[in-house]
Image (spheres, one colour):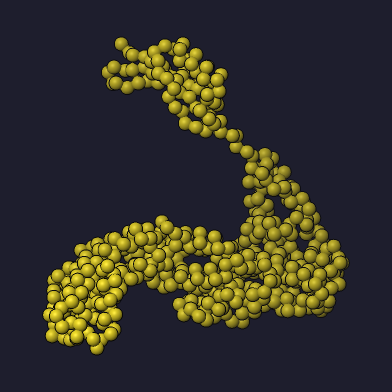
Length: 566
């Protein structure tokens, strides 16, 4: 016969887990207790379940027979996503957000015509070409109408009709202004005069934008368009209001060109380069005096930063001031996006990738606040560091023909240049695997180098580990392992015994022992401890004081050893 009992579960507060309150064989008692718990506000929800034991399987079958209160956990209803209002006036299409959307919807068409959304909105000839293309505009309207209609709960046809009317009014306004001759010709009138004439006009942004778009239209590539924009910037008026309006009209197309991969690649001439070169050039382009100063004093940064010439140098000079903040923002967003991405900086050279990453980190940190904020830089390089610690990159970094000693040196270099506590810990794991490997121990003990050279190599690795940025808990066990290998090498060759008994002068032998004891020419650990013991023993020997009287430097070393021993 089945055994039955009842369990009361309660939820103490909104979002909390269910907890067992009582278990009883009395159904009425379980339900009444549940009601009392709710009435006394000791819980926000209750549930009584009937538990039936199956004797043959030993398992309970559970059925909820009573629930009350916020049984679903009291989770708040999902708020409806706030939607920006649809563009309703032609002027709405000229905002930065709308231009960005236009650029994505018509990306292919704009790329074919080497034009930006800003130019499309200000050039009647481009508008005519788009209308004549037939399907490009219609496809763009469909691409935006379908998700908009679904989000707003209206028909696709209604959204398309709305945008078609908006496009027609925008084209009509542009064509009307062109036919009336209201659009300025900057090449004839001059940019400064046009800006000063239109500064009080409520449509100055549109009119100056049309003049700028017409002025850069003859350019055959993105770099030439940037050069023409900088020519206009050089010719901007000095009167503050007119100058602000003029530079604003230049900044919009400049930011759109710089924000595109094609435009940036053409400007920096990095079409055949890799991502590392591109990011280095972009950082130098907008880094200003801070990055230039770093290049002068840091050779590793200087080796990674390409020279800027021509139009790129002109733009860098402009960006070093306070003008064109939107352009600097466009570059910053591109740098941040690429650093957070998965593309390799130097696909064919893992060692160079580490050097470029280090140079970029130093440069961006030096210019923090101008290109990116410090917290964004740290987060981006922490994300990028993860890509340097996967097996594929490590295999590429270490190669196939290196000795285990060379591999460990490279891994320490990698550990120095990754950011983030988790990444540092992962780098320590890679190091631990290599340092603890039998291959490393065998190569060090049986290798062709002299015992003194081997101990010096181990001491060098220890010093690099302590400077690598690893936490003490990670690098101390690695240093201890290196010390153990050093003890094995010394034991194999009896180096210290031979050194103590060597027929060399006492000051010379003590100097060598002291350097081993202090971790300069050998690893810390058993070898250093033994060298310290033998050095102090020699220094206390008969006649030692007389032999050391003429060697004050050796005496100073012995005093240091005595102090450390104490």
